[in-house]
Image: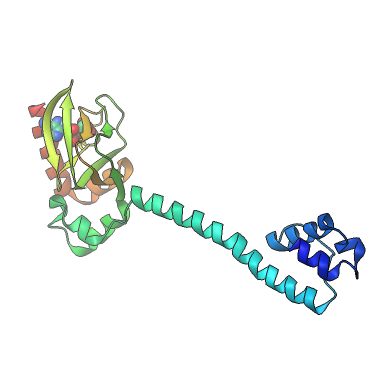
Length: 212
Ligand code: CMP
C-alpha cells in the first residue's frame, strides 16, 4: 500500500508520500484505524486505492478478531454446556417436580465437563457445592479404597452440605463426566423451599454415612 501510494501521490505531495517511510505511516494508520494521519490522497487513483485499502483494513483487523473469538467460544463450550430443562428433568431426584420448579432449577444449576481422572473433591475439603451426574461416572473412595461407584442420575457431595462439615470421601471421575453443580447457598434455599427434596437427600446422606 505504501509503495503504491508513493507512486500515485509522491510527486503531488512529496512531504507526505514522497518516500516509502512517509507512505508507510499513512498505510499503517489507514489499515489499523489507529493513530492520526493528515495525509490524504488528492488524485482520483489515490483516493480509489485508499478506499480499497480501507476495506482491506477492516478485513485485516476483523479476521483475526473473529478467529480468536471463535476459539474462545469453542474452548468455553468444551468445558461447560448449556443446562436444559430435559437434563434437569432426567435427574431421578427431580423427576416428580412440577415444570415450574424444574425451570427454576435450570437457572440455579451450572454445568461442568470433567475429564476422566479429575478429583472433584478430596476427603477433608471444605464443601461449596453438590453435583448431579448427567453423563459418565465417579469413584467414591476412602484412603485409596473404592467405597462406591456412581453414574448418570446419581448425585454426590450432598453429605457435607446436609450436615455441615468437611467432605467425607474423595470423588474422582472414572470416565469423561458431565455434572450439574448446585452451589451451597442455592442448596440451602432449595432445601428450605422443597422439604420433600430435603428429606430424600438427608435419607441418602444418612445411608451413605452408615455405609462409610
Ligand atoms: P460429601 O461428604 O459432601 O463429599 C464426598 C461425597 O461422597 C459424599 O458427600 C457423598 O456424596 C459421597 N459418598 C460418601 N460415601 C458414600 C457411599 N457410601 N456411597 C456413595 N457415595 C458416597
